[in-house]
Image (cartoon, rainbow, N blue to C red; front, side):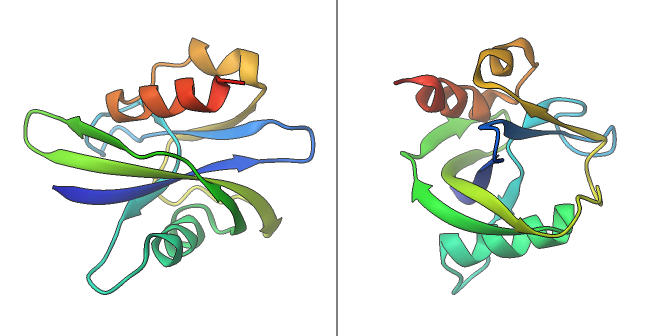
Length: 127
């Protein structure tokens, strides 16, 4: 099982950042919460901060961890570990993704999410 982090980055207007995977990535053009694989001897929190800086050129501060989701894709099983974060520094530069959007909660379900992210969206939307 591959452990992967993801960030639900929330701005001052309570909008959440969604990132669209590029055509070159697995699950092309699906939407996801950005993040990445935890390296050996790395904490989930350190992984998330590193991956967001690498992928989006921004710094985030973690506010809260949400329950993880285990999902089996045809070629691998991942444990997706979500964190609610706030953007603290930098301007977004897409280094891997095709696109991004800041969305209100009521807009999140309109996107074509990667399967592992779908339960994370629903958990986030629960009051």
